[in-house]
Length: 168
Image 1 (cartoon, rainbow, N blue to C red):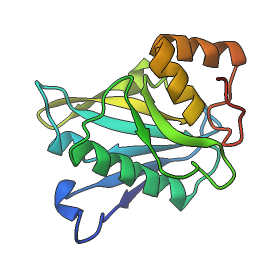
Image 2: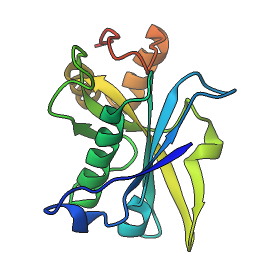
Image 3: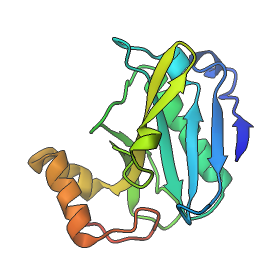
C-alpha cells in the first residue's frame, strides 16, 4: 500500500486540507488496484455520517489518484455524495471509455469489512465509486438504482474494464 498526499491546489486546498489517496495493489483477494480517499471523513460529517470513497481499477495509474481527488473535492466542496448518488466526470474514465460518470454504491468487490472503517472519534463508511455510462445514469433515473444494479448483475460486467459495453 502507498499513501499519496494530494494537494488540490491553491484555490481548492482549503476544502480538504489533508487529503490523501491510499493506493492498494493487487493481492490475494483481488487482482485489481484499489484507490481510497482519506481525509473526507474529517471534513464532512452529517448526523454522525462520515464517508470515504474507493475506486477499483485495472492498473496503477496517476489518473485514478486524480479522480479520487476530484471525488473528494466534489463531495466536500458542496455536492455531498451518498449511497446511490452519481457524479459526472466530464470526460471518459480513461481515454476511449464510454464511462463518464461515477455511481456511488456499496463496496461489493471488497466485501462488508471495507464498508465500515474506524477513524479517530468514530467511524466512516467507505462507498464504492463505480464508473458508468451516461445511458446507465439515465436508466437509473427512470427505473431506480436497484434496477440498474440488477442489469449489471445480469450482464456480469467487469467493473474494472474501462471499455465495457453499456448495459442500458
